Amino acid sequence: GAGVSQSPSNKVTEKGKDVELRCDPISGHTALYWYRQSLGQGLEFLIYFQGNSAPDKSGLPSDRFSAERTGGSVSTLTIQRTQQEDSAVYLCASSFGGQGWNYGYTFGSGTRLTVV
Amino acid sequence: DQQVKQNSPSLSVQEGRISILNCDYTNSMFDYFLWYKKYPAEGPTFLISISSIKDKNEDGRFTVFLNKSAKHLSLHIVPSQPGDSAVYFCAALGKTGANNLFFGTGTRLTVIP
Image 1: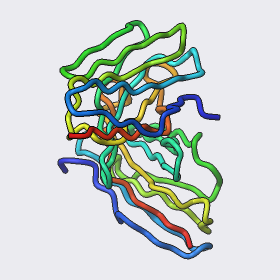
Image 2 (image 1 turned 180 degrees about the vertical axis):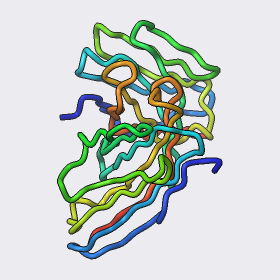
Image 3 (image 1 turned 60 degrees about the horizontal axis):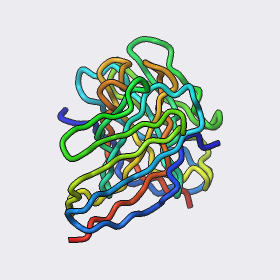
C-alpha cells in the first residue's frame, strides 16, 4: 500500500482481556517496528523485525506482550490479560532495510488502546 | 530513564518568526539524530536528521544544529508558518544501523497567524 496501515484505529477493552493490533507495512519495506506512546511520554520502542532474522524483543515490557510477522509483511502485536497501564497509542513503522536512520521510519496512524 | 529530553512541552510563535525547538540527550554514544513531526490522529513523519559528525544540516526552512559537547540539538524553523503547528519529536540512535530510536516526549508548536 501507499503507507503503513494499522487497525483498528481505536480499541476499548476490558481489563484482563486479550487484544490484537495489526500493522500492514509499506510494500517492499523489510524492517518493521512497534512503538507505543503513553500519555505524557515519548515513543517507547517495543520490538523490531528485519527480514527473516530473529526479532529484537528487547523493548517488550512484559511477557504479556508478543508480536509476530508473517511472511515478512503483516505484523500482529498481541497483549494478553490487558492492564490499565497498557492504555496507550501503539504505533507501527516500517523502513527500507534496517537503515531506518538513513531514511527515517514511516509510521502508521496508530491504534489507540484504552483498557477500562 | 529518559535518554532524550525535550523540556519544553509547548511553544507558541508568531507567523513569520523563527521557531526554535530544543532537545537534550544523556548518552554520548548516540550516533544519529532525527526530528519527527506529528499532527493529531496521524503517525509521526520524518522531518530532518543529522549525523554526529556534523554540527548543522539544513533543508529549506528547517535547520538542525548539533552541539555534541553540550549534548544538545535544536531545530530551527524560519519563517514559521501556521501549517507548522504540530508536535515535534526529537529522536536518537545508539549507533549507525541500530534497531531502535530513543524518542523525546515532544514539543507542541503553535504558530499564530
